[in-house]
Image (cartoon, rainbow, N blue to C red):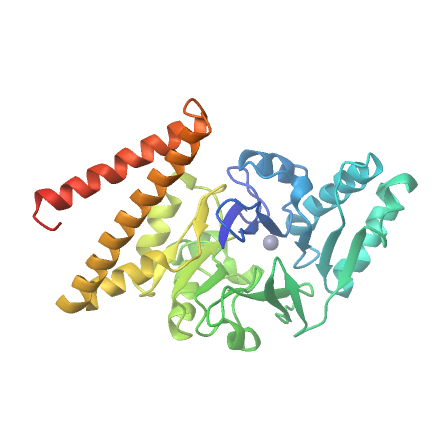
Length: 350
Ligand SMILES: [Zn+2]
């Protein structure tokens, strides 16, 4: 699974978009992606952001709205409008499911009634499914188990969620408020934690994060360290020094958090799968025997891949398709594997 940040800023930003993101999953390398959109930012720019990352909004079938604040819900009104219109034109396939707690669902229904036309709202309740979720309720979304929970905000009722990445790893999103005791049980031991960070600890006097129930980078990092999070992603920040935000926030954060720290820019995509972590762990702990085994496995796979490419090329040749794009692609790959095999030969390993 991957995450694409559509926006990373707090409510009143001008250099980036307000916090919203998409989780994306593919069943197989060549199959089409499934999307789970979380919040919509403050308006129609959601459509621009999606376009910039080459996601067709018509392919989004699952949406979750955390709370009623304008910097989260207004973009969803735009999505709702676009989707209803596309349904009217028969240009939207299947149905869309929008999840939220009672207040969010109520606001979406009311706003749609007031701002959209009857020809648009007639899809609500049919192919536009507004689904109310309760604290602790589980749903299956983009083929993953998702559990929604109340973060017990004192400002506006807000839900976060936990999504299982596989049997034993999960990502937790605690919304746009500090992870409190009620949320800790979900956040603890998360492979990924998405946490707000309003500003640097050093800038707290200037931005007053506590007045708005927000955290500094230091607070978020200390909390993530305390509850044994492995990867921490910080968002919902001020944007006064956007070009150096990543560097400055990392600098402060790494003093308090020992896992991997991410301060993404808008439109950045991060792979949530295990590769890099496993790689570094393995590198540190592998003994000679394990290295040899890994090497043999790799060699075996290189040869298998080479043979398979050769077979596919022979096949195409037989069908007279040596001028096809596929044939040329295979030829390129064959050369890559051929040079790998020659390297093994050079070092006397074959
Ligand atoms: Zn917010």
